[in-house]
Image (cartoon, rainbow, N blue to C red; front, top):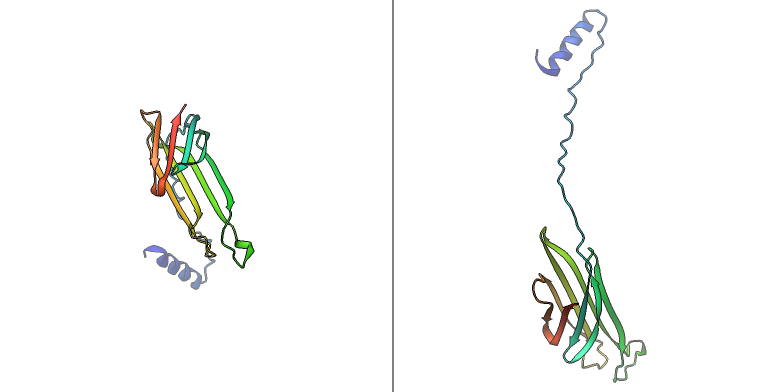
Length: 168
């Protein structure tokens, strides 16, 4: 008899014949040890360097300053401020709109031998028709790039949004 069913049938026959039952144990072989593959990964930090940033919309400079970029971290600046509404609305809580911008610049690995960068810049403002509708208008630049060669890069988005980066 093969397999487990045959083994149990023999055991039942022995018990049925009046003989003392034998102590039976079913065991299976131990599972093989897990396979562990180690991969050498060296994650070196991208050197931190100062970057002069100018963010503008049209001829208006929204922000200009220096950010330290690198080290596997993001550099970020943002501003949120109220803008007066000329219209006289019934609901005074929403009488002012908000003007907001944010800029995030981070270094990232594009390959083991090549550093890359990521820029995210957004600008939003109240709609120019600030009757009491409380609308906003927004533009943004979201760009991954390689910064080889030139010390200065300029990114232009819709609506006159422009970000200039300059390595010191």
